[in-house]
Image 1 (tube, rainbow, N blue to C red):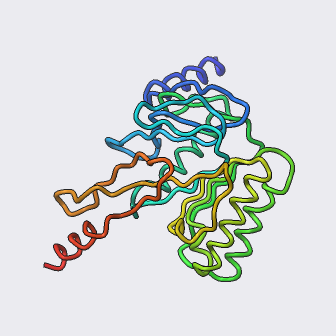
Image 2 (cartoon, rainbow, N blue to C red; image 1 turned 60 degrees about the vertical axis):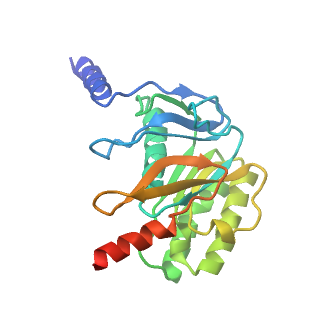
Image 3 (cartoon, rainbow, N blue to C red; image 1 turned 60 degrees about the horizontal axis):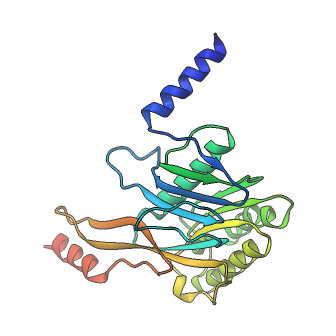
Length: 238
C-alpha cells in the first residue's frame, strides 16, 4: 500500500505540474519550454542549455558543445529564476523524478553547486564563497556550477578577474556552468567553449514595470534599455 501511495503521489504531482520524463545524457543540461515550479501564475517558459545536447526550441535553439554560459541582462529579468529552474531540473532528474519542461536532457553530475548572490561583501564572504565554489571544480567527479552575480562579494575590478578564473577552471576541469553577471563587458576573452547570453528588456508595462523577454538570446550581451528605466523614473517622480 505504501509503495502504491508513493507512486500515485508522484503521478498526481507530475500531472498537476505538467511534468515530463527527462532524457539522461552523458554530458549536458538542456531544456525546452522549462518552467520554475516556485513561480505561480502565468509564466513565459524558456529554452536553454549547456554541454552537448540535442534539444531544439524552434526560434530559440541553444547551442550545443559549450561548457559555460555567462548570462547577462536586465535587472529583474529572470536570470536567477533561470538558474533555479536549471537546478530544479538537475536535482529532480537525479532523484528519478519528472521535470517541469516540454523536453529535458540531463547529464550525470556528482556535484551541483547553486550559489546565490550576497547582499553585501567582505573578506569573510569572499573566502566562504570561494571555499564552497572552487573545491567541486578541483575534486573528482563531474560538477554543475550555477552561480548568481559572483561580483556581489567583492570589488567590480577584482570580481571580473575572479569570474574569468572560474569560467576558465570550469572549462579546464570538464565541468558545466551557468554564471550570471553584470560584468560581461569587463571580462577577458572567454575560452572557445564558453559563450555570453543575454536577456533583454523590451518596454514598459501599464504599471511602469519593465517588460522583459525572459527567453535568453544566445551569443549576445543582454541589456536593460536605458530609456525604459528613465521613463519609469520620470513617471514615478511625477
